[in-house]
Length: 166
Image: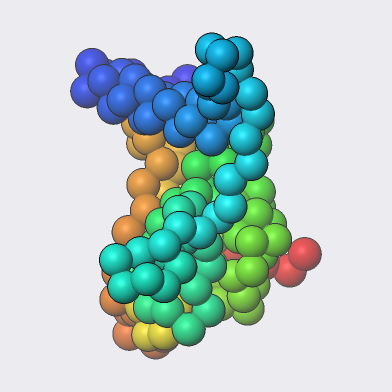
């Protein structure tokens, strides 16, 4: 069961409103006669310099961890919206499918040593000397993603992680 606070409800309402607004804008337009019509949009727009800039986050292979944080969040949020939102493997599989390198990932256990659901699950991707780190779980009111420095030893997560052997 997720712990709900008035702040998380407000944040969820704002996020839902933004998502609905974007989906409505992308998926539907009004023709001059007032009838809705479908439109197709690309994933790029022209930036101030005249060069294309992504209108939705994409993986930036040569970019920094900060450059890839928006895309990492999109992938994380898509899993959070699914039935597998408390399963670390679902996040790893989605990140791999999105193009992040599996060999550079870590994930914590989904369950405690007494087989209860973990209060939080963390997962990460090492990226150019930094870490994209996500956290979800019953004790987390909403998915959280940040860029953090690697810890000594070249890992991203502190403590015991589970093997990613699938």
